[in-house]
Amino acid sequence: MQHIIVDSEIGLTQEDFVELEKKFNWKFPKTFKEFYLNNNGGELADEYADNDFLLSGFIPFKYGSAPIERTYKDLVDDFPELKDFVPFADDQGGNCFLISMRKKDYGKVYIWLMDEKELAFVIDSFDALINEIE
Image 1 (tube, one colour):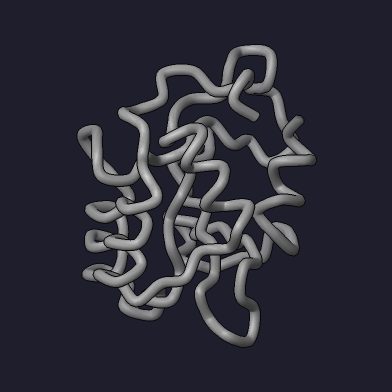
Image 2 (cartoon, rainbow, N blue to C red):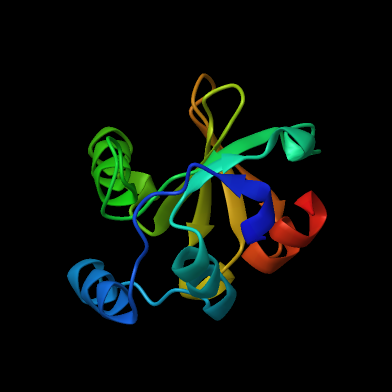
C-alpha cells in the first residue's frame, strides 16, 4: 500500500514496535505491523480518497502532531470503554478507525462515531480494510 500513501512520518523500526507493545500491553496483528513498518501513517493519495469507508488518512506512531499514543490517551480519557482499541485512522468526518485488541474480536476493525459516541463494526481485519481500499 506504500504507493497510495503520501506524507508519511519518520519510519518505524522493529524495536519501536517492541517498545510500543510493551508500553501499552498490545500485540499488533502481523499485517498491521507490516503496514506501519512501511508507512508510518500518512494521507491517502488523491486517487484513493473516494473509498467506501471515507477513510482519509492513517495516524502515525511516535511522530507527528497527534501520534497514535496521544490519540489513544485522549480517546480513552474521554471514553474509557475504548481502552482495548487502538486508533489508527480517521475518516472524512472526523470519526476514528480502531483495531480491537480484545481476545473476543482481536484484529477486527471498528469506527468510533464521535457525534453519536457509538462504536460500529467495519470489517473483519486490517488486511481486509486495506484490500478494499486498494
